[in-house]
Length: 127
Image (tube, rainbow, N blue to C red):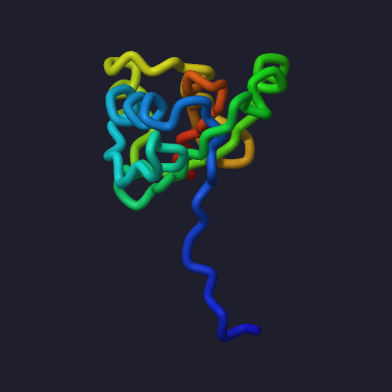
């Protein structure tokens, strides 16, 4: 099995409205909308750089209530080259900041944003 390479992972976020969620990622987080599928759209993808997230419509996102009770229920973590610069950019764009940049003993500095459906995304720089 050593000759099989795993090349990437794409988290799928559950959202109530795929076009509205894609617009949030575009306007507030600087992502591009890669595609919206269905009529009306029930699946889609957004990306920024090499980071890609898929969006799937559900009538009631599973994690909304749980995320409200948990301090840090992260559904995707994206490694970035400059976490503090990105934090300033997303704050300027009006993203909902769930956690400001925090230096951790495990060697990373991260901050979290929350989308309108309660999904928390972590942006992290190591070292």
